[in-house]
Length: 250
Image 1: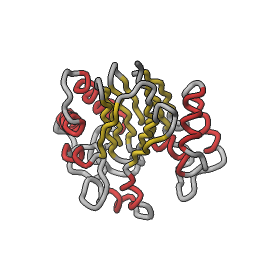
Image 2: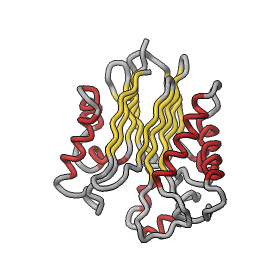
Image 3: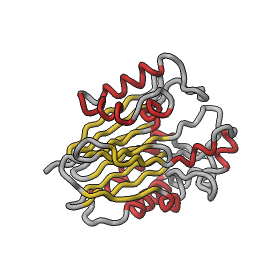
Image 4: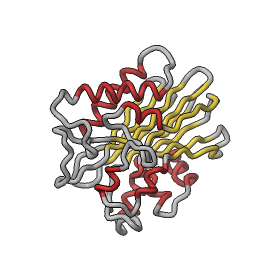
């Protein structure tokens, strides 16, 4: 599996995205930003959360076996929960959290998992886009206050994210595709998918941009679009932006 990626923090702040790759796996995380004035009940920040969760996932995906990715994620969330060390209110609705994309290559199949609003685009050997996997349950939260959104986090009828509840892993979107040489998968956080959601790009254009040269070209396209102002309906002009392109070899 050949993996190319780029990640960029929003200007003036730490990068709360994380991307990790191994011989046969990809991990892409997008930590949920907590405004400074909002209590979280936690002594840790989103950067700690994505690094701790990423390390737990990498350890498990590096181990032999093909456990379901939902089990791998649930186990990793439980490890993060333990790593809080009893210093935090793990029931707090604003506890640090993250979106998750996982990809695992097997001899004949490629397993994937998507939790919350990052995206996975499956590209066939001829370059055709065969599927776009997005968990759009957060879309129902638009127009709600932050407190209202927090009240729907990891609840039936709301949306699911990796935080302190291992059961959230069961709510992820999962699947598998045949492992065919030259098939590829494009994964990105919403800091990249805003090109499609808000700035008029098609997924075909984004993937062509990623495949044509350095992956940072996709990030540069986002920053150029953001320079004209925040997306419609959003007050966030800039966001962390991370993308990865995985191609399966002979």
